[in-house]
Image 1 (cartoon, rainbow, N blue to C red):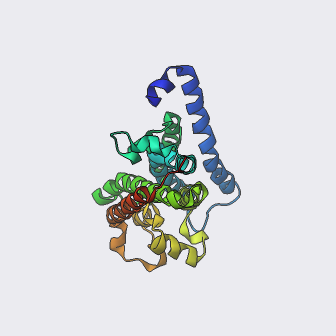
Image 2: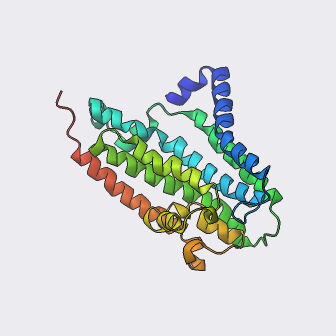
Image 3: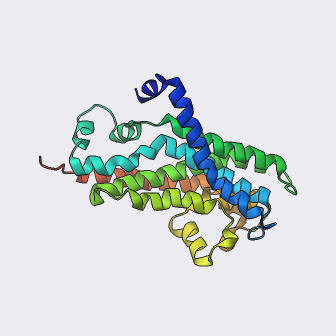
Length: 255
């Protein structure tokens, strides 16, 4: 319904899509400005940083387009309009995700994918093997699932906090920005937290460093580069449990 509504005004949709493409592209402009002054960042070349940027931006864009509307759940919990979704014969999470579905967010996906393809063309010194080639699309898909799990968990937290979208955004939007840069520029404790506590590093850092032929962060074993699917499944299961707990604990507003 929302897609049909959006496509009713084609020119308006194209303009908002381009605006989204340009606005999200400013993140990469910052990286361009940095490399206008330096030759490397934390020991990584411009092409390598662009590869990190492209993988996380594409993965986050896919998750944001599918589940970005979950950050609005806090309002529905606070004003009681979630009751409308509960009485419909459809999964509540699907309804929350589809609420005011914004197809313009495809601009973020296309922008990140464009940078990713360009980085793959200009990367030097990478010995491409069938395993590394297959790992690139795999990390994008698994990265999107990891971000999606964090979004669902953040939405479940809003059943208790009622309006805490910023908490979820700190891990989703904040995590996306963090993963655009090499782990060598951050403190070791922060890298450990992103690997072991909230394992966002498996979105791109861990598999991407294997593709680039660099050591894994915080001394992880080599096989950790292939653990992203396992991390995505585990996080998805935990997010699902959190969501079910949140829905069952919902008591409406009483009005």
